[in-house]
Length: 147
Image (cartoon, rainbow, N blue to C red):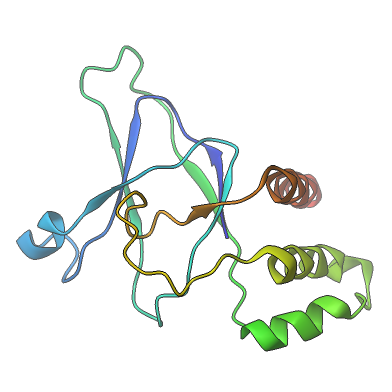
């Protein structure tokens, strides 16, 4: 799950391409990522390959200041294991948020068997439902308050 905490309007995010970062092949392989501030996105596992994003600011922006802040919640479990863990109760209050994330994913993880959707650039992810979006935003806010 990628949660976009902050993204100035004068920003553009690009997913990294294949190859050595900064090489001509990698630079040509970059694609625009369409994210909205305050929204979480499901991001399918890519089999352990490197992933990343590059933040650029629009040159003609009136206020080109600001940083993009994203949170990444990685859940390295198979769908079957995720269902099993989500059904369990958290053993401590420190684990409650983890189980909340598991429950959200277990009930609403998108079909990831449909590769190459032309409307969704690679590494953009799939926007979550309003209910899941609110739940993830609440979890992030709680984690920020305790750190």
